[in-house]
Length: 289
Image 1: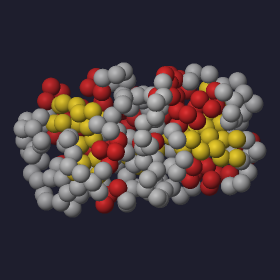
Image 2 (image 1 turned 45 degrees about the vertical axis):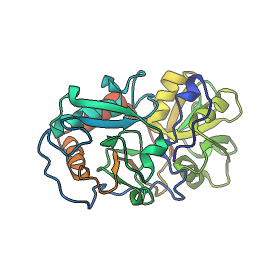
Image 3 (image 1 turned 90 degrees about the horizontal axis):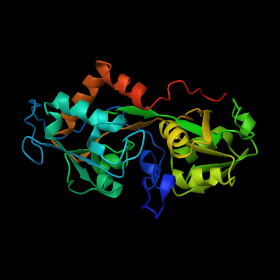
Image 4 (image 1 turned 180 degrees about the vertical axis):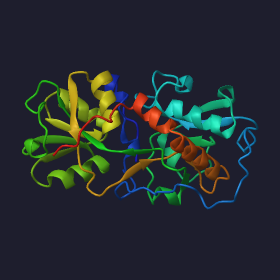
C-alpha cells in the first residue's frame, strides 16, 4: 500500500499518503464491515490486557503528518489518530502515561510478521488481502476522494465532474484515487500516476497537472498546511469502492476484539464523530455533480 519511502524534502516528504490506498494489494479498497478477529477470546478487563509489556499499551506508527498527527511527536494527542489512540486507550483502561509509541515502517505494519506494537494507527485501509496477514479493528473512518486544484486556477470554481474533462489529473499509482478517478471520468481526462500524493501535489504546484485526486481529509491538510496555494473543490462519487481505515494488530491477536469494542463504544457515544469534526474538517466539502 505505501511505496518505499523516497528521498523527498519539505511538504512532499510529509505527504507520503499511500497508507490509505491499495498499492501492492492488487484490488480496490473494499473494507470489511467488521474488522474483528476470529482469534481466541480475551477478557477485556480494563488495564489488564495481554499486551507486549505488562500494564503498557504500545502503539505503532510511522512518519507523522497532518491531519492524523500534528507536529513531530505522535504522542502529543494532537491530530485525529493521536487523539483517537488516547480515547481508545482510556476505553481499554490505560491512562495516557501508560501509552508508549513505536516508530515503524508501513511495511512492518501490514507485513505477516510478529509486530513490535499492540496495535498500529497509521491510516491503513482494510482490505481482504491484508486480512490474510494481519487483524483489523472495527473501522474508525470511511474515506472519500477529494479533488485538489490551484486556488486561483481555471478550475477553482468547478462544481461538476464534467468541468474537469480534458484535464491532466494526478493520482497515486495503483491506489484508490486511481480506481475512483477512472470510474468518474473514464477516458475524458488524462490520469497521470505518481508514486505518492506528495509528488502529485508538487506536479500541481508546477503546473504539470491541473488537478490531483487524493483522500479528502489529507487533501484538506495539504491545501491548508503544505500547499496553501491550492484548494479542495469537491469529492468524487465512490464508484462502488468503499474504503475504511482500521487499527492493525497481529493476525489472531488476543487484543483485536477488545480494540474493536473500544472503537465501537467511541462510535456509539459520539466521540469518534467529535474527533472527525475537530481534526478532519471535511464534512462540508460537497460531492462534485
